[in-house]
Each structure stands twice: as structure tokens, then as C-alpha cells.
Amino acid sequence: MKEQLALLGAVVLLVSSLAPQVVAVQGESPYPIPEQVLAGAREYVISKVGETFFDSYMTWSPELSCFRPLRDPRNASRGNLPDWVRYPRYVIIYWLRIPEKPFVDEIVVVNVKEDGGWFQDTAHDEGLPDCVSRPEECEFPIDREAAIEIAQAAGLRRGDGPWEADFRWYGRDYNTYAWEVRNELGEWRGELVLVDANDGAVIDMGEWSVTVWGAPPIAP
Image (cartoon, rainbow, N blue to C red; front, side):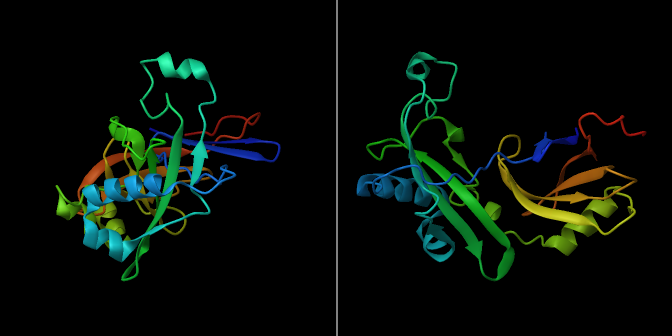
């Protein structure tokens, strides 16, 4: 389990088996997003987080939301693709921000049908915890300092520099928010631990390294 950084000219590409798949997309639609689409997105988000959580901590971002046309008509007949990839869709972006917990400052992505309906594939949203079914998934009691302590107790060694810790959504494998705590054990390499931001469980451990294309490999 490694993170690799590829540097080619002025382009830097970060590939991580642990990295979340949330992407902020700039608006592409030349016209306003229909009300039924916004209403459908809002209804879906509230079905996951509840109305109180939505009203308190989530804000729609019109600047980042957009319409995504079907770029390849052949996708509609490709049953191996998620349903939200096979049809035109609106990408509705929300900010999730909890003032009393400033480390919670994340983008939530919801794909919605043109008529405001919901897609069936569970991966049509990113960064959206299920607070209704599992309220404990939306409390985030583990802050940065606590995550670092938990990672150390799990065996993460003290590195050559300061600790790195990032609060992120890990939907692909874990469907939760977690802290990625990293050390540095030499130039361009180290170890990392994923700590669940809600219950403090260690949900994964691994190594990271950086590789520059055209450069010799890093010695272990």
C-alpha cells in the first residue's frame, strides 16, 4: 500500500491506494441548475444526514456544481459501468463544515439525474456519511492530536520531521471519515496509519513513498 508521486515536467500526479476519490469540479453548465435537481439533491442528502445536520453544517456550492453531459453515447449500454456514469447528470457540490470542529472542512459530491431523481449505485455520492442510520458516523470526536496518539500506540514510529495528519473521506473501502497520519523515515518515504475519526479505530496501516519519473529507485 503505497503513495507514489510522479513528476513529469510541471505536472505532479499523486496516486494513492488510500487517497479519497472526491474531486472538486468547476462548473461546466452555461445555464442555471434546475430547481428540481437542487431539490432532488437536497432530499437525497437529508435522507443520509438528517435535516438538522444538513441545515447546520452543509452549504450548496453553485460555483462548483455543474451539468455533465454523456460524453460517450456508448456508455449508456455498458452495464459494467455505474448507472450514474451511463447517463447525463448534474454534479451537485456541498461544503461540509462544522465550526466547532474546524478540521471538518470537506467537499461532498452528489450525482443527480436530469429530472432530480436519484441513481441506484451507492457510489453516486462522495463524502456523505450516513448519519441517519449510524449517528456515530457524524460526530467526529477524534481530532488531530488524538489521531496522532492513536497512530503512535498502533506502532507508527517517530519520523525525521513533524507528524503529518489529514482528515479525509475514505468511501471506496471504508465509507467513513478518517485521519491519515504519516511519518517520514528518510527522504521521500515513510509509514502511515488510518484512524477512524469517529471511534478511533485503526482501520489500515501501510507505507508511502515518492518516486520521480526518470530518477533511480529509493533505497529501502
